[in-house]
Amino acid sequence: MSRSIKGLMVKDFQLMRSQMKFYFIVMMLWGVVMASSLNMVFFAGYNALICSFLLVSTFSYDAFENGYAYLFTLPVSRRDYIYEKYMFGFLLTTVPFLLVSAVCWAALVIRDSGMHFGVYCLSVSTALPMAYLMLALEIPLQIKFGQEKSRIVSMLLIGGMSAAMGLIGFLSESVGVAEFLSGIAGFGIGGVAVLVAAVVVVLLMVSYRISCRIMEKKEF
Amino acid sequence: MIRLNNVVKRYDNFCLECSMEIPAGQVTGLIGRNGAGKSTAFKAILGLIRTDGGTIEVFGKDAAALTQADREQIGVVLSDSGFCSYLTIRDYLPVLSAMYADFSRDKFTADCDRMGLPLKKKIKEFSTGMKRKLQILAALSHNARLLVLDEPTAGLDVVARDELLGLLREYAEDGERSIVISSHISSDLEGICDDVYMIENGKIVLHEDTDVLLNEYGLLKVTKDQFAQLDQTYLLRTKEESFGYSCLTNQRQFYQDNYPSVVIERGSIDEVITLMSKH
Image 1: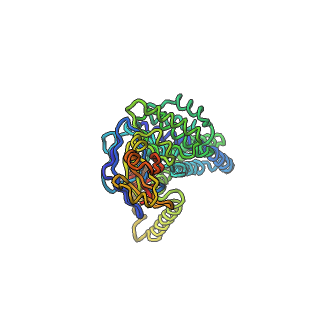
Image 2: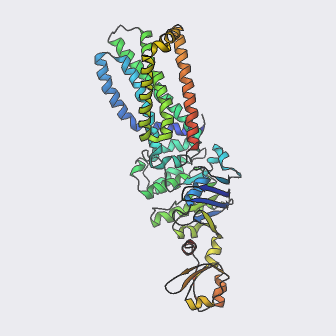
Image 3: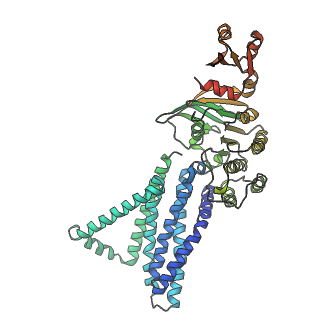
């Protein structure tokens, strides 16, 4: 890891430290609610999405009071900055997800829920690709539009994607969605996991390239 | 150390067109009114804006091709940007340590202490002057070969200004390091700069050694009759006043010798800015 990326990681970690109190309070409250209903699978997945959103706040801190200008006078290239955001977003999403998932599993074992470990892993891990896709969507939007506008644009995009999914569902018979899904199911759990991972990696790479291009064009 | 060759940057209502050279071991001042293009020139040097023409070299390389190691050799103060306000100086210590191979943590914290900058207080609670001190100390903390300082003394009281200018003089003493500095406080520049560029409406209108400017430039204050009889060969600028004319010359001695009755004041950066900007 280059010195500049390490420095940026440390900076974002320091920024996150001030957010941690808020994060822990939210997680504690949700944890109590979820533990009482034994809905630990949902809780673990929800945690991953919350963590992916935490990355957004680091962009706001960086942009505050034209902070980007000074940031890019430090020995930090624009590509370093973007690369670090994806790396930090990955860590910020994955590490708490693994920790919270382990705690939730422990809670399920203690409460003797009877859930099989494999089923649990499969259930909670569906949230992780969603969290990574949120990163792939949010990072370029944050760089392009800033916090306020990107919120509106991401809502429009998510709304548009939901509408598209609804339309596909409505037209499922004519466009052959059922056949497509049954074809994917034929790969088995392992095959589907590899397929999902590949799609997520490709989308993250596309997102990274778009983010780099947007950042290279920006002036401060 | 820095060379700007016909650099052009166009905005809707403003165009920067400038050439400058800052050699190694030189302290160069950039003067001009607000909006003249000083910050735009600094941002072009630092790669914060894309230029529309010309070339910029830093350390003999295209500014866009500087490596991380090259960029570690540059310390910067910007007039409109700084450290993230939500962190403390203590939070920034590991960041600077990670980014700069030559970051002197002990010296930096000692300097912060001496300048009255609390390590554990969030930077957003600092005054403007404290934020400026922090940027200057950070720029001086990693043994940079080049300092690019846009209004580094803005918001500082007289004592802090003197102290920081002392630090900058000390920094430049080794003869290998360069500083390019802008300030609206002319006495700061007169005391520290080897030469000054004046920028007006995005164009360099004057480049002169500070010693020449202070010793050979002068401001003539003449009545209309005196002005009519004056040899105007060495007048750079003339401005009509209630009493007659104010005239800027780079040959003060000539007018002192030949027109002993004319009131002639010594040259200063303030007068150069005032006279050169009015036309």
